[in-house]
Structure formats: structure tokens, C-alpha cells
Length: 609
Image (cartoon, rainbow, N blue to C red; front, side, top):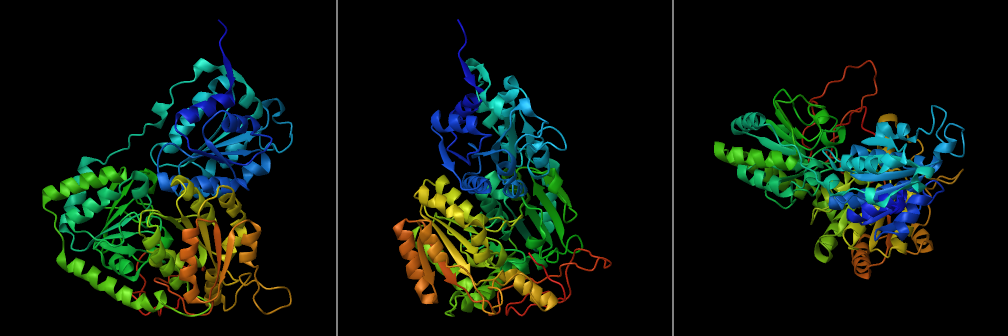
């Protein structure tokens, strides 16, 4: 009896369906027609047409941050500029440990190296996979129909295993349509099974010795907690040992912010009590973070290794000791390491340091008192902190599980300390800081949560770059709200350039020959895309309008008139090296202590992120 044959595309689509795939995001192009036809017409997978390829990746990114495990979100793109458009979004996913599989259509193998339409050919025959290798976890290209399915399954497992990340698989057009036996499809379930690495028991014992001796221990955690599903394990460790916990911007919301042991967020955009605890700790337990400049105040907050020792836990051995030398390095999944540390700490009799907890309580109270005027500011145009406070209050009351994403730029100074997390679903693009990421990610988060509300907080510059993604929210009828802070300038860049150079360059938006700042009408833009568009000029008008937007369930864009001259919240100024001949070393900076009044040291150089 003759075997029944199916195309490679049909085989991949059927396996993805069996694996429980919920969403495939993509853009149609002539290189991925075979994949799209099979995904759309022969599966139960919901296929979402994005308006640009990078938005497809960011939709998948937002979905992953909500789910953090199998089944993976799938992205499909097509040839030349279509495939090239995903590069910054894939790089963001790579450096922020976002699992996904990108199926990139490329031209037929028959025409390889002839320089046909949109072939990446000059350095070698169709080398799109080679272009992507430096910015993703793995990039491969199918070369034979009879091995393509196995290559696809290995790519899938790679994206899930160890430190998650985006894997790119290029599939030539003719291979997509090549026939393979239907009964050759393997069981895909083994490729979805992930067993994570545990910590070395000897390392755990050494870590507990240090913890028992420490007087001022502090846990600093990043996105490794969320990817590991270690939320409960972190709470149990903190409570068992009485150790304060502080999040990086990537880790925000993975530990309850109303917990008595929470020190908020650390770093340039941290809470003042978080930074105080970082400066004064004698033992740091870093979990799932590599201590970026943003999270360490340009490597000035922690006095490692002089007066502070470091226990570093990470699933990626390459991140251990990257920024600071370690006393104990544990190459381990975060949850498994925390469970082992908790068990060993209980056995060793590790207990809470009452004096250290009293410091945390005092500093938390001082922070709350210091920022209260910002949270309740009635100035018009509006203050970032007031808007963040009102968003947080409404979400906590109306939809506490809503996804909140906040962007980079000036928003990075307010998202970590002023957006109050009422659930674990608060996310930030914390390494690549791609402008406008939050709008796409919020939509992906709403999809992952079965259509629950999602809110994106971003600046006007970011929204201009990424606004068309709101068309997807309209098409999918999702309750996604974009809150756009409109000050007609790239404010964080403006502030830093004025500080360093005394003048700004390409920050303010003006019509040629005019002095007055200018910008588009975002509410009108929103209406043109099918969203509800709302302009807010006064502080007292925002909260009731935001409540109505949440209740409406409609895609909405708020254009918030935002001030630009009022002194801003900055928890840690630090030098950004610009003198090539000057020696740089990590460590505390004289005079860069705690500042509850926000009169920060005036360094000649500053960060420009």
C-alpha cells in the first residue's frame, strides 16, 4: 500500500498543533506561503497577522513573559527585508531570555547563490541563519526535506532548554513544499520536556556558611525567577531566613511588593530604600541576574568584593561573575537553588537580623514620605509619577491580574519605583530597551491571558515608532490601553545632554524654523486606527477616564500632556565614562549616597540610556 504523503509545512503545522501551540504571529511574504497555508488552514492554532515583522516577535515576547514555558509562541516571517525586520526584536528576546521559535521562509534551494530576489547571498549562498547567529540562541537552515522535521524539533527544544531564548530556523521555499511520509512524524512530546539543572550541594553548603555569618544579607533577583517559576520558592527562602529582597527592573513583580521583606527595586531607576539596602549590604545573593549598569547604578551601588560578598545563582554559566567576582557561583535553575538554600538554611539555624529589617522598614517609610508629593502631584501638564500612581490604583481595584508593560526612556525612571505591582504580570524590556516594545508586548500579554486587560506605558517618541501595533489590538478586539506620555521630546536623553553638554541634540520635536515644541495628535491617530483616543490635560481628569477605559474593554490610546521642566525623580546618578584615557573601576562613588530629597550629585558625565 502506498504511503500517504504530506508537505514539510503540513508536518510542522501538525506537530505544532499536537504540542498545544496557541498562537502563531507573522507577516505574509512570498517566502513563507507554504508555512502560512498549513498553519492557517490545517491547525487549530490562532494565526495573528502583524503589521510588521518585528511586531510579530514582540507579540510573541509579551505572550512568553506571561506564560514562561511550553507551548512556545511561534513567529513566521519571509525573505529579505521581512526577515531582516525581526533583528532588533529577536535580539531583545535573546538578551532577555524570551523563548520562541521563528520560522523564517527563504527562497528555493534551486536558486541559491544566484542572487535572486532578496537572497542573503554575497558572503555565501542564502546565509540568513548566519546573519542571525550573534543575536539569538541558535540559528539553523533546513537543507533536506527528510531531516527538516527533526531539525525543527531540536530547534524547539533548544528554545525551551536551560536559559530560554529565541531560535531561528530558516526553511527554503521548495523544502516547505517537499513531500514526506505522513507516518514519519515523531511524537513531539519528548521535545517539550525540560528538566532543569540543580545546584552543587557543596556550593549550597558554602553559601549557607556565608549567609549564617552575614549581618546584612540581601537577595537581588532578575528575570530568572519568572522563567524558573521560582516565585513561591523566593518567598519561602526570604521568610525562612529573614532576608530582604530587592528586584531589578527585569525582575519587578516576581516578589510581592507589599511583603514586609520587599525592598522594592534596585538601580538607576530603583526605590531609594532598595538602593540603600544595596549600598549597605555585606552579602548579596544574586539570582537570575547579571547586574547590568541600569540595575547597579553603573556598578556603583554594590561594594563587591571589598565589603560585600557575592553568592551568584544563574542557569547560564556565562553570566556567573560577569560584573562582580563571586564568593560562591552556582550554575543552577533559580527555583532548585532556592529550594536547596532554604532547606540548608533551616538546618543551619539561619535566622532574621532584627536590626537589618528595622533599617529596611525605616528606609521604606522615608521613601514613601519623600515621593508622596510626586504621587499626588496636581501639576498640569501632568507628572509621570501621578499617572503611574493612578494607573496602579485603578488596576489594583478593577483588574489586579492585568498585564502592565512599561517602556524605556523617561518611563524607565518611573516604571520600577512608581508602578505598583498588584500581580506578577508587570513586565519591562530591561536590557535592549527597545522603544515602543511595551505596546506590542501588552497585546501579546492580553492574548496569553485569554483577553484580559493590558496596559502599556510609553513615551511619545516610543509610540511614534510603534503605534501601528494598535491595529492588531483593534482587529483582535482586545482590551489594550496605551498610555502615551506626550512631552514632544525624548526627555531622558534631553535631560542627560543638557547636564553633560548644556544643550540638547535631536531630542525636542519642532517644525522647521519654529521655537515651540510640536507633536502629532495621538488621540486623532488612535481614532484613525479604530481605537478610542483620549487627550488628558489635567491631573484630575485622568483617573476617571482611565477607569472608564478599563470598564469599556475597548482598545484605547491616552495622550497625556506631560511636563518637561519640573525636576524629576532620580534615585542614582552615576558617571557614564567618556574619557578614553581615564581608568574606570567598579565600586562606590564618594558622595553618591542616599538622597531622599532628590538633590542628586552633579557629575560631569551621566548615563544616557
